[in-house]
Amino acid sequence: MTQIMSKMPDPAHKENLHTEQEVKIKDSLQKIKNKFIVMSGKGGVGKTSTSINLSIALANKGYRVGLMDVDLHGPDVPRMLGLTGLLGLNENQKLEPANFSENLKVVSIESLMPRKDDAIIWRGPIKYSAIQQFIGDVEWGDLDFLIIDSPPGTGDEPLTVAQMIVDAKAIIVTTPQEISLADVRKSINFCKTVKMEVFGVIENMSGFACPHCGKMIDLFGTGGGERTARGMGIPFLGNIPFDPDVVLCGDTGTCYRDVHSDSRVTTAFDELANKIAESVS
Image (tube, rainbow, N blue to C red; front, side, top):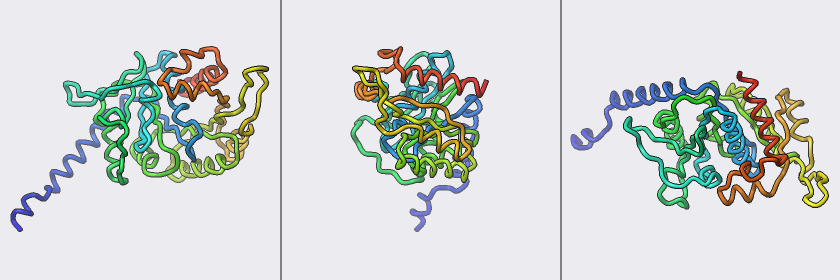
């Protein structure tokens, strides 16, 4: 019995560790001016590609940007950006984010896994702890924007962000069809419940330009995101057209806007970045 008791954690020690972590999180967040979590009610609407292209658009405008991937079960950000290798520790024993460019830093659980195809099988408390470390144990430095890519739905990860980053604002991504819009309404109501400000709604995959004649084709309908946003009193941020090259670039880890700088998608993300920058200036 005495041997077992000697191995039990000291409650005071646990409390000290908890307080120390809270201090580190607070210190990190104080250096970040604006925080946005990119959410979606369902998977497959292009949430991660939206997070990535928005982050790059802001970084290209000269803002210091961090991209934090809290989709712990499907961390696609490093692969879509072509980032390889593991994150290292600096002299302060903090994780150094991966550098995509001079102005864009990235952290993802995949950049901490030696075997990229291993499954993450975690329950809520471990996810909470991981997100704590993504904030407090990472050397983010001074940032103008932190973009947080969350998994679809309203589970542990967005709830943890809402509780931990109380001034974070939500950007909700949808496609035009009703099955996606129904889940968007759940995401908006989630934000209202946890008292997170909804910055606005983006309608992704909104129209496809025929490569032969240039005519716009509504593959998934159009206008549903705007109607839903207006109906629920939420700002509508704009439409992002569907472009197969976004998928191709994501699969190959190529920066879409470097290859397609004059495309409608690139223009749409530049306009979105301008709206965000103007709103916080």
